[in-house]
Length: 438
Image 1 (cartoon, rainbow, N blue to C red):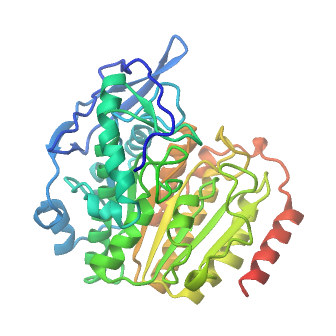
Image 2 (image 1 turned 180 degrees about the vertical axis):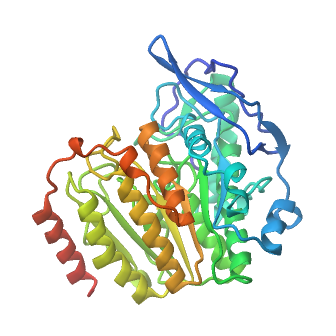
């Protein structure tokens, strides 16, 4: 039975500015208001979250009865379909993985007119999606972990917050279990929508799950590194079991190695996991010689990039590593662990990605999916802890998926960049190409 590695009591969190603390009970809910707008302000040296438009709260319903899901099945000319699960109750004061993150993105999308209100049918928000079931979660995580986390919610409710990961600062509040189910559900409901749309169109919408807690560090037996459930891994298994999409290609461009996803599919020949991450960064896994085991040997590719790697490095990686790997694997679906913490402004690492880097990656991955798997592709939010670079970069990813020109030049400052370690990057790429016969 999984039990919290370390339990520490803290005072119950308070929220300034009229913040809504989601009441997670048997009837899970979803923020339902396309015109919602959030603001993040500073007062006395602290950030505070406030809502300009109070969101309505609705019960989630089963996907087969969901009018929003069925409307995408009936046909839409949407280019992007997204879901929002901000986990407002899962929060620790001053923690980088905070409940400011998703609202900051929604604010940016509204400000930059990249929402259904401004773009009409080109952008569709999937609403009233169902939470993931325990069985969905147990396709990746042990049932002992899932039941242990659910039971720990009583303690979190009594103490205000507990720490559930002895190897990193992963916390839980009274709402963490249910909000993590909702985040995973947002992803698998997008899988339903994208797959159904692909049956009726050669250009289905790209899915984007704006969710938290993130998931790619969560290992099968427990939480890790800010992550509770492996959202991408759960979606991959769901796509296989429910939709019969056998071969799944996962791209993880978060600055940290997606060790949880790596471990979940390390011996699986039908799921290819490809991670680019900063060499030596948390959690210290993802070495270049970690290539899978048994039947899965060769379907895990880890490319640790030296600190200082940036746009030039990632363009080369995409052309010389990601494209030939995907072409060789021939996927039925592409899933993306979209971490934005490789941005040069992000405080938790030391890469030099820019907003333009993320535009390039999103645009190229979209085209890759169109070429290889009928356009079936979904992005899942992972890291990204500078609210400005996070929100601008996600917005530029939306532009890429819509086919709009990049606006990265309005945000990126070339003056903060320095020379990339091109020799070390080339050496890493050549070593990976040799190991994987690319």
